[in-house]
Amino acid sequence: MRSKGFDGMTCSIAGVTAAIGDRWAMLILRDLVCGIRRYEDFRQSSGVTNATLSDRLKHLEANGIIERRRYQVNPERFEYLLTLKGWQIAPLMPLLAQIGDRLGLSGAAAPPMTFVNRKTGNEIRFGFIDQTTGEQVSPVDLEIRPGDGADALVRWRLSHGDKRREALEEVLASVGDAPKE
Image 1 (cartoon, rainbow, N blue to C red):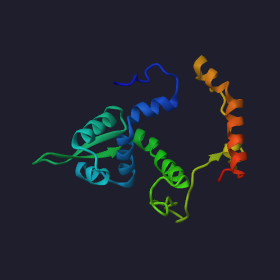
Image 2: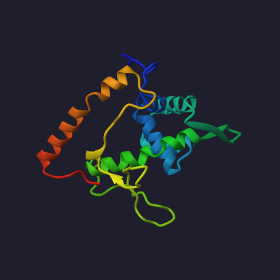
Image 3: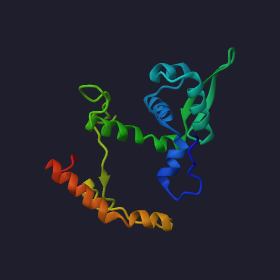
Image 4: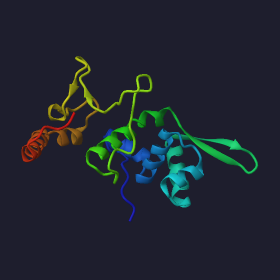
């Protein structure tokens, strides 16, 4: 059964999710961020089938996330590159990797990838930054408010903020530890 699309939904997360597509497309984006560009390299990296890889590349291209560029004429071969839109989605990769590392989901004894500042060599990590003070904000102190583009359904979702806070406090109390920054 095909799932319903996100058309008409006022939600930036749904929009990005629809543009990306699915878990295989996420792995293709991971590989693109790592510098992989060619079809066979995507196959080697992920083990994805030819049909699935071809379909996901077409989907990402149709959504303006990647562009296809010919690098060989006979036989004709193409490589794939992130567009500006794709590079704006790219920060999801280290974010997801670091969450996976915190939760021990990689299957490895240590993080498989480390993200560093190219200029300093220092490790980087994701976080919420207060735009006025420049200080990092703990997830406990994160509040979600309706934006200027919020419709009635977004406002309804966000009306549950007290329950979000209660659930987070309950989890934190059960582990007796504050979230790691």
